[in-house]
Length: 460
Image (cartoon, rainbow, N blue to C red; front, side, top):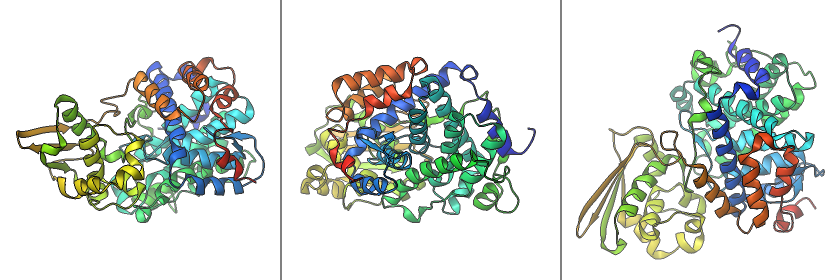
């Protein structure tokens, strides 16, 4: 490793070319982008979406940037609102090594700048690859357990680096300017687990996207900033946030091993950490004809970390609680044998029978033998007991979703938001992203002002 870690990562991002990216990483980046767009169109159903839309509309009065499934807002407003839409209904990606959602921070500012500047799909692909790779690698260098022990929440801390990288790559930054953008991004790195259990954790993500955009746009103006933010002795990210971190991990095999391929996707809405539980449950309900009325008890084992986050909500409140409640999610999978946003509407989660099932039929306990998102499920019926164990959830790098599954997810949630022609056109554009002449073509298809008038109206 030559030079400091900040500048090494900056040099990588500034010099990355399409030809440098292996085919597997390019294709996975397309998978991630299409999944992100599916999450964003679904995000119009988020409880807090109108509140964030009002705030985003108040940031500025220009309208140069498209809202996914909506109209137009300012560059800043679109970055914030698209970032929130991606995470609004708890079904976007997760980089499990750092428990960080990557796409709400990286994708929105990249789309906004690429649209504004008329950049090609190939340019966007390179920018998204660079932003995702830098974000995840900055996270690897943190030493996540030490970082988490201090209470930090990854998206608001790591997100600005990924967002600044993507914007800087689209704007053609050299290494020095990119490193300064990292310094300005790090100066905005924030967000802690004090927000857990509230929608503020989702605000961390869209705010991270805006922070990275601001960092890159200010660095482009030659604003003076440190080029050694990550490892600076006095106030550097790794020293303050993680007791020194593991800087060498951030650059190990850089450009040879692609950390972005470790980003996990979600087939179902609900918290990323209970996707292992979801997979184990679906493995059973898909293999056996289970009559919920004949189920005496469902016993679920989770790692201590996941249990602390999601195993203590048998009595959930509204939609956000339902989305992160292991009890409710398990109960609705058992009874409905499907899991879409329909299961997270008040008509379903407020059903007295469903609330009773979550509180009485589902038992969740921490299992010290389990780590990460590994989960065990035992379904006791009057005819016997069924068991399942999930090491790798559907959508994880070890158990990836197919492109067809991601396309189906996009079609499911884009229906009623985008026209059938726009849905098919978006899928085709993403599948052939390197041949797309201008990102404006993609954003024109994703914009649906007539269908999203309430979001467009907030600027007035």
